[in-house]
Image (cartoon, rainbow, N blue to C red; front, top):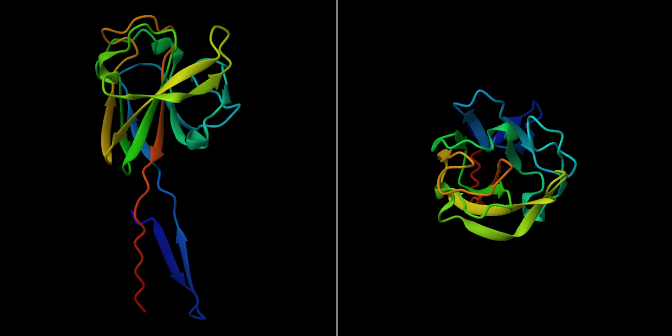
Length: 173
């Protein structure tokens, strides 16, 4: 799809509007529970099966698309629990339970951020953030408790921030 819509009216005035790309699409999971796409901001529900809300969002993640996961999948050990498609290269963030004493193997190589995502869970007030850059295309994420994971009692969230794309302009009259 072309992110630029160019129109010319009867007076020959040209209007060019950039159309936003849907960064995350084609969310697939073998889980029988609900996964959903939303926009990350304060006061938004972050699980599909709880009323917990986001309280604070690092500026780089504010208004980013994110996948709302069901907290009832917190014990999942599948190596391919979640698949989705990125429309362009992006930094993918995982918001993960800070009580974890060991992370799942699929988080090996992800960078831990000094920033956190604030939440209203009655047991914890934040989730740690881990990031990794992906090219456009399919991304596969494993379950919350894939070995050797230990200690996490809440499911993760998935957030994506598009990588800056070089501007390309061309006008033919």
